Length: 291
Ligand code: SAM
Image (cartoon, rainbow, N blue to C red; front, side, top):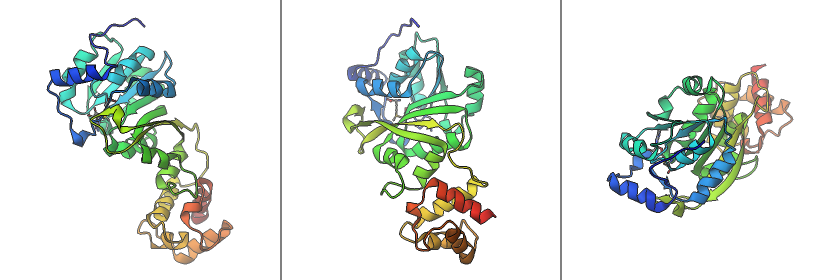
């Protein structure tokens, strides 16, 4: 697609030029750390596997650096930005692109199904973003739990969060986030990104993670919400045995005897800790408790 833009934003100097021109002040409350490294940008786009027929949802376009690159690869880009001060900037930086829609809203309030219907004939969208770190988990889990038409999420997140999403049973990073994400998608860390690739520099390291949504969950469970309550209860009291963690949880109202019997029925030791259980074992435990 042949397109022109007044500004190509791929150099840090261009970003600084735009920020100064508009006297833009970074807002910590919106998690604003703008990416200024074109190699990292290229890695994200490549990891997302954008094809010509795709419609991409970009969360938090900032001044539009990644938006420009996405628009050059995809059929359409819908960019949702909460900060109204960035909207006039985006009008300038994205001028000349006829396949971008900018929406000034909070992503947590946007109806993604309606976006897919309007811009992609209800087919699944690809999500690509350098996420605001203060709401990474609500955004990702919101997309999964609402069953939004999204088949692929490629996002920059805090490195530690990416590691938790990808962690396997028994590792120190394994927890409720690992299990919740892995129930919906298969995670893969595509790149580690140091703080000097952003302005302002974040205090933590970052990573690009790709989450490919499962067509169907890897385990079958009668009551997935009960399974997630069991998972949360097990990891809320990580030091305790599974039996004590579940019996003490205010979210669950099974007696200690019933829980002990369900644990035993799975062939697990009565002193097992929740952090060693796989997703499949949590699913079987939930099924055991609903029998
Ligand atoms: N994409 C840009 C880049 O890579 O340089 C900016 C990334 S910055 C880490 C996060 C962006 O998300 C900011 O532009 C911020 O204003 C925006 N943002 C923060 N909270 C948001 C929300 N709830 N809904 C939509 N955008 C949000």
